[in-house]
Length: 106
Image 1: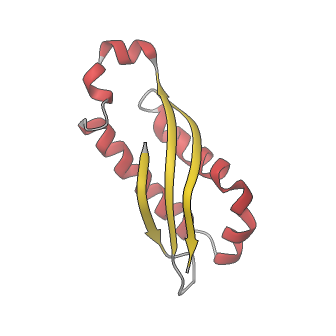
Image 2 (image 1 turned 180 degrees about the horizontal axis):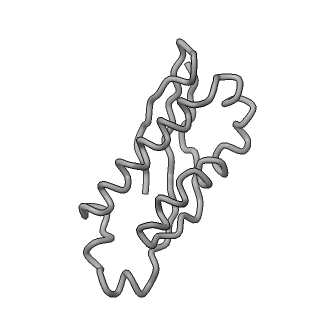
């Protein structure tokens, strides 16, 4: 699933960051069989989850300075995955990979 563009300001900066993420995830098979409609992209559960994801990314990036973001750039997908994984686990979803489709600091 794609997050779409997420825009936020880094800590103490006049600049802004734009991120567009691709999230690869896997829903537990038993859960999917039991609640097939709840895990469709348009379901309330998934819409709320991705709203929380966008907010969590804003909070995470907003807690870093521009220098910290640049230093973390090679590790940023893994750091975001670590930051978001627990949110997915609570919904019985395994977050497999975070791919940065777009990354701009301006």
